[in-house]
Image (tube, rainbow, N blue to C red):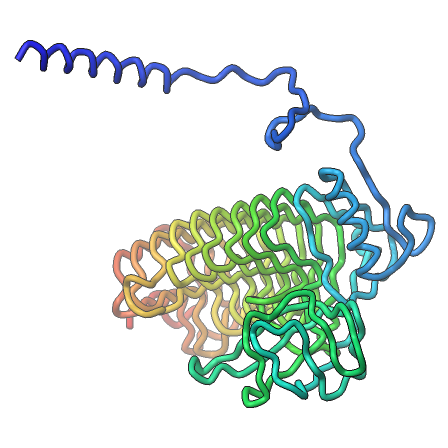
Length: 436
């Protein structure tokens, strides 16, 4: 018994010591040095690597995606820095593939990345998942270096398969791809190729800044490619991305889309006249910050996709979108506050019904927003559908300036629970709260 007590006392002393050490603060870094492999703490250098790109009088002269890509790759090879895009219109036949620790900064409205018109054709021969080439029925408009999307119907899934690649070699109508598609593109699946791509693309990269650029998707001359694959900006599996002062407009798809990307900040940007989603924090994205943006005339202004958590959408101006803000599949613990949501064509704020309680978006807060003139004569400003739970809707100004007609300020689905409506100002509606 004595041995056991001694061991217990020793264990208690060890736990006390461990807790004491855990509570101690680490000494601050006051005189940092550049140390191999340390990407967190570094001296504040007075001058960093900067490469200019432009139609003339630049370090790299040109006005295409190729010269932009060359600058990004050069800066990335030396450990990071800034690519400064000088005024001009840059004709895009492929995406610029971003790299870690690179800052891409333009001259605002004077630095325009414009997507070239797309062309589409069927495949004239089958491509298996391991092949690294395609044969086109009509190669007119396709060039080596082009970014493309491959499409095929996926009959077992009643959907379609989409893969993005680059054409790197050619003999007549046969083109080599930069990588094998890893999917089958067969004629029986109506396989085809189109010159479609994001204007800026990042995959598995981190610590990137995009600033003061105008991205134009040329939507009237391009086929649609949705936001799970493209947009003016498309990011996949990225971390710590800052997008500031960027205009993303006229894309036949999304304005800015990021999928499974964490700590993305989109601030002081404009997403205008895109056929898809204005801003698309995509599946699994954690802690997005969406602040001070202008989001107009898109299908949906801000679309919280699947499993977006701990996000902030603040002080944005959303005008004339079909849906202002959409929240759904396991999107939890997000704050939507101090936004203006004006003249949404269908709904101001929508909580999607999903597939039951386990899939719905719970514990979100809608606070201090101004929501004006939502939908048609049966329009709804805030529509909480499905089995959504634990939503706080507080301090909002919900206004209808047209005739009341059959419009509702807030509509609650009959499976919803714990929806708290607190201190909202509601004016001009036929029904303030409609419980279905």
